[in-house]
Length: 144
Image 1 (tube, rainbow, N blue to C red):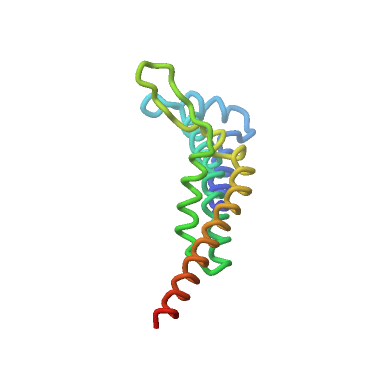
Image 2 (cartoon, rainbow, N blue to C red):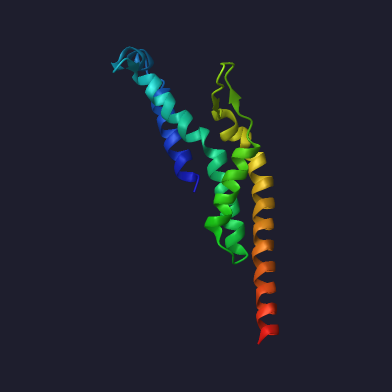
């Protein structure tokens, strides 16, 4: 899942930092709608690398649940919400505070949390699904 993000981010990072005389100056001076090409390429790089933790969170929980023959999509969605709960947020100091998520924790800094809690939440999800299914089967067998 994350490999395509790594490839895209790396490609735009190489284009933005290509070591040819005058290339970086040209990217900085070429402006599209008030934004330089260097800033656009950096935004694409940061956006693709910056969401790596979130993609890894979904992918780890999805893969673990699929290996244990439970619904991987639901496990991934549940862990994506757990990942947002665990990620520190940014609060503005206004009278009505505005909340947001920094790229730093959604990216590589959040990978450790994504791995550990992705496996843990998928295990809990898989345990609940199999336990509830067993209980339903036992109750149905007793009723028949």
